[in-house]
Image 1 (cartoon, rainbow, N blue to C red):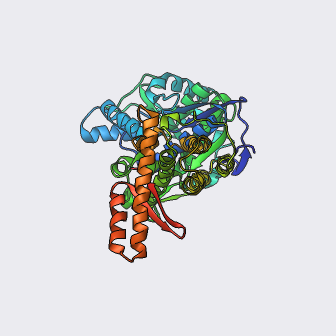
Image 2: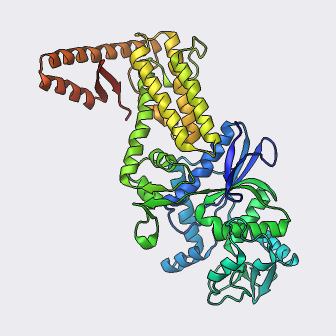
Image 3: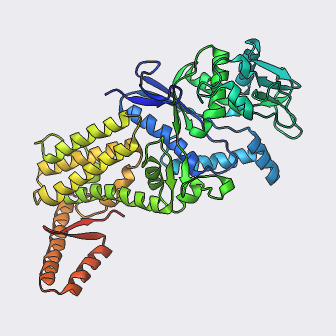
Length: 501
């Protein structure tokens, strides 16, 4: 099955065919570093990370470029409010961005250019637009003449006449038409500025991304990501600039993620429901927040609430529990996952691994459907639990240990593609009896002893229940729970497992 991507430009799913076979260039709009980023921004950072991970899993050589906007009106305003230099604001919130990005499991981009490092190239592109008759200078400002670009509105599916109705000329602007947008802004007292053919000033916001994407990915590249709120005007203006300067369409596939809503309303500072990622990460692990952001398809809105995050926390714990319990039950050292007799007789568990991988790939091939991919992981975790609790011989033989190892490896590998399973998911398992230690024989023997003691307690509990001594039964269950052992009563008798911590 070919990978299919929903393209905002064409408003349909298309087969993914990269510009250069085997290679993929992705440009992702990065942060304007004047504040902590909110949970909606977090989704826009997680989505390209997942896309890159999956394309790499599928064998592509991927280059992800994500810019940092370090000169912009909001930065200057925040610096003035705090009475410090704009660069101090940039330094503070760039560091905060990187910290919060890492907490969400978002890997660093291959290239992270800063706008201020590319001002010379911006001046060159602006001059090219003037030379091509698409831009004009006015009193030290330079504006893009939207009426001269025949494709304007192609991404947002809007006509220029309709856009004109809502356009306004701001105070101090000298543009000829309300819809024209700034490429270069004349210097104002106390603001950072650079020399240019039109006088000292600084670049407009939109030109930054056109220049940096062109420089690092070429005149036409594969995928451009961002939040749906960037379709107009930012990405529309990027197309006008890049196409106008380079003579070709800049992007094959435009990918936009949906909003984060809070109690059914779009998150906005004006509504008082603004949530920064940093605030949320103070209460929930990054993997849980990331799980939440991928729990729906990226193009659909997601409703933020504590209840949703708690459900995601429990769902992720079920995956980690399945892995940890299987490793313990099969007496596997986590460091040996992938090395224990991977060849062996096929079992129903192996069939579940094959089916889970097929469904995972089909989901991700279908416009990066992370919700479907997560569902396939849970199905595999259920199959793993069933095998360990009902089908695996006791003590486990090498064939059983190999089957468990294959299933655990699949969950870890596919979970890593989504960024929700990694080495830390095995930490608690590594400390459990039968799953570690310098002496494999001693560790395995200890694991068997623990299993025997737990089973003895469950046998005693079963006798107590038969005698209707429910106080004793509950005491055994509760004391085991305090030690991290969860007892589940089923029609086939009591089952137990370790709960990942």
